[in-house]
Each structure stands twice: as C-alpha cells, then as structure tokens.
Image 1 (spheres, rainbow, N blue to C red):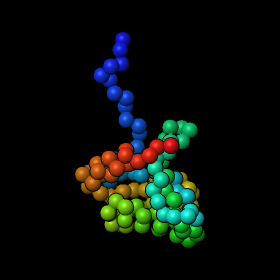
Image 2: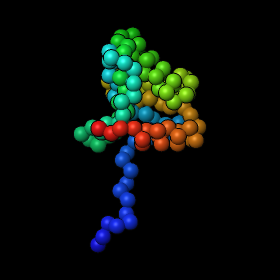
Image 3: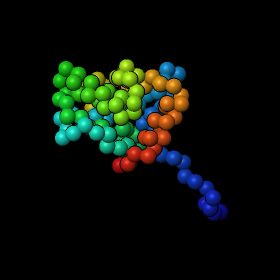
Image 4: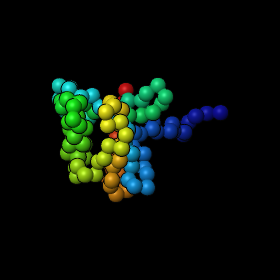
Length: 117
C-alpha cells in the first residue's frame, strides 16, 4: 500500500480550545538576555509547549507579568485576555486565553508557523 496522497497529521499545538477560550501551555525562561517567543518544543511525553524567555526575574510575579505583556504585545490582545491558571511559580505554566474563536484560530496558525524543537 502506498502513502502517496496522504499527509501526516499536523504536530500538536500548545493552544487547546476550551469553552472559556483556550489554554496555552508555556515553558518560561526568566532572566534571559531578551524578551522573545522562541518557538514550540515537545517534552518527553509528547506535550507541546510554547517556549518563551523574558528578562524579568522570577520574583513577585514579575516574570509572569512580563510573559503576559509579551504575549499581549506580540499577538495584539489586551493583557486581560491572559490569565495564569497553573504554574504561577513554575517554569511550566498554563494560561487561559480569552478571545473569540476567530482570534484563537489566527493564533493557532501563528503557533503552527513557529520553529519546532
């Protein structure tokens, strides 16, 4: 049997739709040289994570605030659209993204275009 004409399933994204918007899985590196979205990485369990670095220190919520500010600026959404729902003191975080389904679809396309590691 030939695989011609068949396409592989797209790799999983760190953005998962939910009734209240979406959940974004992030692996945050604080105290980095610059603020940037680095790409999508997959852990040993096959779970995708958005890799983000910020210059802020991980004290008093500064790194989380910098993460939200970077995502809001990059994706042109209000800061209030992002809420850390788990991992507030961990490098691995889950954020709620409150946005319309059209906006979430556009975000998924942008995430799919990011470099993978």
